[in-house]
Image 1 (cartoon, rainbow, N blue to C red):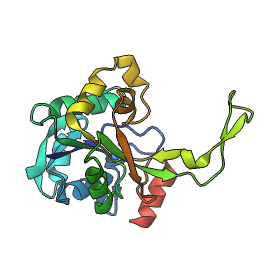
Image 2: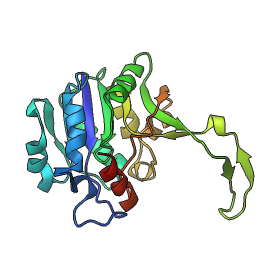
Image 3: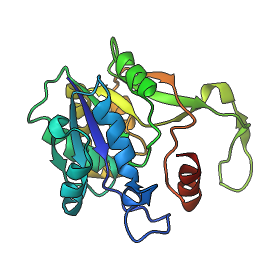
Amino acid sequence: MNIALLLSGGIGTRISSEVPKQYICVRGRMIISYTLQRLIEHEMIDALQVVAEKTWWEKIRSLLPDPSKLRGFSMPGENRQLSILNGLRDIDEYAKASDIVFIHDAVRPFLSDELIAVTIGAVSGHDGALPVLPLKDTVYYSEDGNTVSRTLERSKILAGQAPEAFLFGRYLKANEALSKEELLSVSGSSEPALMAGLDIVTVPGDEKNFKITTDEDLKRFEETI
């Protein structure tokens, strides 16, 4: 079983809105509704678990084109990774260790059918998979944050994206092995897996699959949709 874990608990402090960015309406629809449609209608997604504040649960349910795949809701944590852990623990009530958990952000509404399929498919023979993009600009390293110390080999540095997919049992154990302090410092979904020594493979990312974080991102979405 392939289980989508959709993260919709953020509050969006870098965007000008009275509601969290995932619930902003664009073209008469909430941003999250575009992402939900992608997940619910994809043939490789068998179940959906949503991390969101309880006040939004019924609204999210009403946005689903097909509610049959929805297995439940989870409460957000103090940061993204603790929200993931809350979702994983709820998924553990109905999932098998060999299932795949597919983690995505509600504010990445341009998730393509192809990227869903490629990311899930790449887990075969590995512990997990994530999309990455090559860096186009020269990359520099600074020891003090003010002066350039050296250049880095651009071909070996990659920008990670959501979604990320993992073997459920191994990924849950990797997260539960970390302390709360360690989980609070995690900067990407794959970090707990890498810390546990899991085998994570990369797949080509999609530049259109951007995250709506700022007002400029929201404008870009409005102009593209």
